[in-house]
Length: 248
Image 1 (cartoon, rainbow, N blue to C red):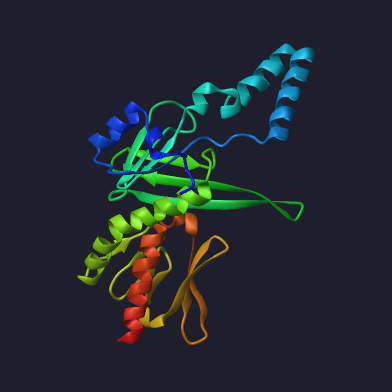
Image 2 (spheres, one colour):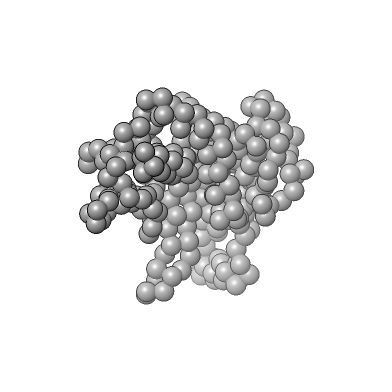
């Protein structure tokens, strides 16, 4: 991964990793910095406001402190990925959250802004929900979301995929939020059950997961990617069951 070297772990992070048995470090990500042009613009705007009206200028400067370029407190935050989980500072507030891959429900929401018909910035939001009240919201506040996002999904797949598949093959049902999977088929919340014999393929397109029907029936079930927990586990198990049904 394109990240800082694993030896950048602070003593506190290393202690947490050991306590939660997170295993070997996989990468460390720092907060994303503003580009030079935007940084200069913000500085000039703050100075201009301070020169004209003190209170609006101070409020604008306080707003800027959410960026690591203007706040040491934000600049020292990190997202650490490990073999068995993660440690992350929240974008807002203090403290650290520890999440293990084998118990997390991971949701992703990736949205590209369109301004006057032209694609603009892409926003990344991953919600990692652990047992109890243990949860973290990880966003493009950290550099490299196109790297750490897929890495987290694959880590969850390695940690949970085999056990989920085994449970489903043994007759259980796996809940992924909007969809659930069983040996007999796919169930969409509020839309009923679709047997594997009626599923041609499952694809991800335009921010949605689509279960395509057989026999020219077209799309039968659809849900937003952001409503699917552990997306890569869902896709791997669903594709295995769909292929098993086709070969039966």
